[in-house]
Image 1 (cartoon, rainbow, N blue to C red):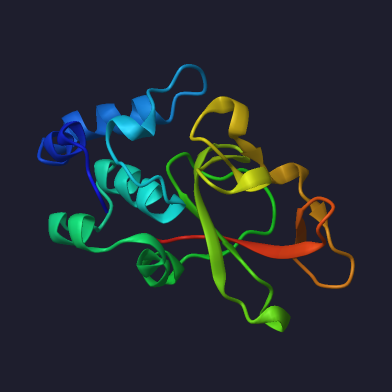
Image 2 (cartoon, rainbow, N blue to C red):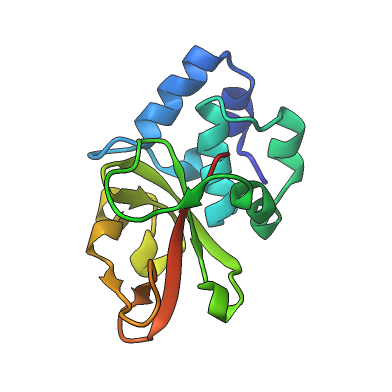
Length: 167
């Protein structure tokens, strides 16, 4: 991931100071731009940065050497299928294709609590790391033919499952 100078500085702070920055990035109103801290704006990098700032099991070396979809295996490990209901704030939320369509992860966001997810580059699943682009996964339309599967791209027919990451 490409950190800005402010992001590199923030990553070296103690956990209480990092948590304060992460909490600001998760504000429902007026969060600072994520681009203050990272430059590439990929969903995986963005969520990994905020999870690291919140004290997740990510090392400083991983933070600066893993990029893009190379984070997917870490987000994909552990956790479980979301079957509705509120999600604890700060939980990484992984969007995957249903097993019948290969089961591959394709997007990740961060729960702000309840069913609100913040992300970048996810279109209707969270875009822009701001309140306007937040996604309410509780409003996703269920696909009747596959359990725990949702239509994640209105008008496209794209299907997804929502997984809660242990990372």
